[in-house]
Length: 118
Image 1: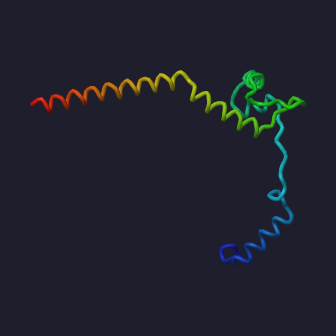
Image 2 (image 1 turned 180 degrees about the horizontal axis):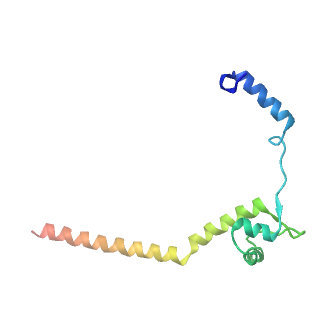
């Protein structure tokens, strides 16, 4: 039977057959353990930066010297997000926006006074 004309029951039967032989979806796969070099390539940084992150406690090195790739990636994302929030650029941008808002409010107040003075 062609897949274009398959009935829903046939599709379910095929899916059950496929999952019978490859039960990847049923099994919980273990952590992906990688070396510092592989993690550096995965992050797009140099190995020294991975060592620095491990020393700072951002990512965890296992006792065998390897890293859990998925866990390290998630922790690195969290670290990057928190660094972005604390960055001096963000503070400067916030101060600039507040100053511009204050100036606009002053200009609007002056225009309102000019309109009411007439």
